[in-house]
Image 1 (tube, rainbow, N blue to C red):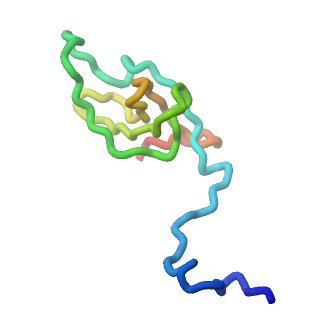
Image 2 (image 1 turned 180 degrees about the horizontal axis):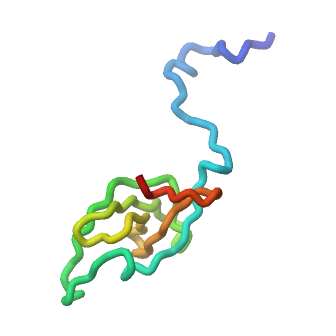
Image 3 (image 1 turned 180 degrees about the vertical axis):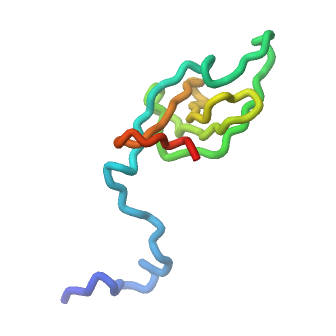
Length: 106
């Protein structure tokens, strides 16, 4: 016996609607590494810690260290350009869609 796709074999299996969506090629980001000195203002004394706010992780993994999810960094007092940041290897990336549309601009 085959069940239609809208029916579930057990009530527990599909009790909540799926939030997962299908990803096509246009959903993925193309990352380009940026020079951190070009996106973050450094003070005269580079020994002082820099306070930069991140706004959560994105699904992309750092292409350099391949171990951590990148974090979104928006423009702020010491940040000139919105970018993605790897806290592990301290790399900065610009992101755009395969069609060339920037992913980090509003």
